[in-house]
Length: 477
Length: 50
Image (cartoon, rainbow over all chains, first blue to last red; front, side, top):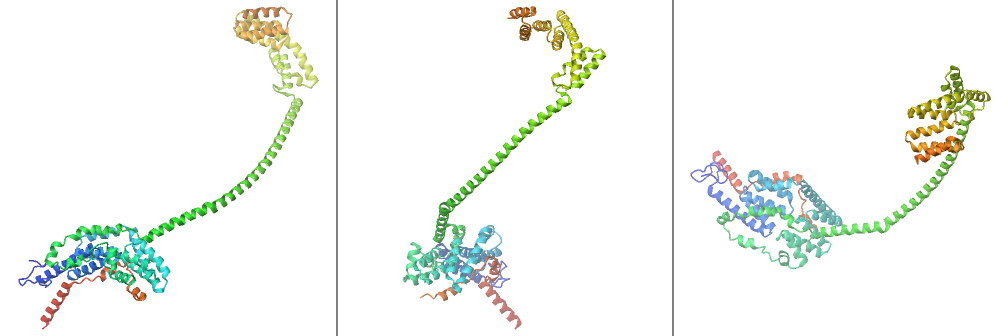
């Protein structure tokens, strides 16, 4: 046999070899501890959290290793908003039983939710600040702070009690009752809440009937007293089943009405703000914007019209300058003898040189480039005319003869070229013009042929070539 | 009649999360069996001294 407390072997007289305690005494302590644990469990189930805490503390007085009792004690603290006390119990529990312990999950659920942890800490600080305000007599500040606390932690029993006390102090009994009802919903047999309620309601029994809604808050006591330590071992099964729901029970409670009013207040405030913006601020701003827009538009139009005036003036200047430039260019060209085909004097000089070299064809080519109307120089005109008279008829006759023979031999392309040159050199050569039409006709370029025949008819109307041209045109159709 | 000032004194400031460590150390860790064990040890010591 081993000791139930430390696990060391028992001596023959029933005493533990390690801790020196008698086996019967250890058993008695453990059973008593279990008995109080079961009482605490029963009370916790009917939401008599204060009673449960008392019993669970007794259970731990008899056996500090009663893990179930310690975990349940932590849960009761947690439910009443006493987070630090709850954590303290669970940490000790985890220390005594590191493995397969529900306390591990409880601690993790808080530690892993850093936002919740911060909120809890904030709540505690605000609550402590509230106490300071109350002691200093700043009741209004205390009330505001306390409402914030309860908004963040609706199950915080001490907060509700303090709020009730504050309302009692300011003679607001209805609100005090409301706060006390909330306390009794969380902790059905809270001594302070019952005491305050009795004071303001004047009826000691009223709290139980109003708040518990038929809940039998004394069931634990009446039933619990009949349980013997032996029976308690058999009943020690309930806590594990209800523990998780207790842990999550914070979320089951409806937020306090203070929160609702705060929310409604915020919504109403927002609506009023939006309405003020809509009816006062926005129209004023719109009018200001419209005014500034009109001013800007006017300024822009004025600027635009002045720019347009400037542009049109500049355009006029540009046109007159362009005209001046053209005029000056023409004058300069006349003065220097420049034309589209190059320098007039140069062409005349080249024509004379080619003539002297015996190349009359080249000379004629240079002469055709000269527009004699552009030349003011009399000497140049004289030289041009002399050359023209000597060269052109000769070269035109050569070109005509060559073209005619090429036409006769069926060499139309070359004939076309030479006949065109012959007409260029001598516009009065009606034969050259007629045979140019014939060349087109042979090349089956009938439109060009008709056009050329028409020139023959119009330039030399009474000639033989004109009649032939008419016959040919009739033949082409 | 409730005495506001007296009642306020009953409310103690809550421990903050940072104070959990202190709360754990201050937790009453002795049970009856510890007390009895201590008494038994003292008794044994006295006997041995005598």
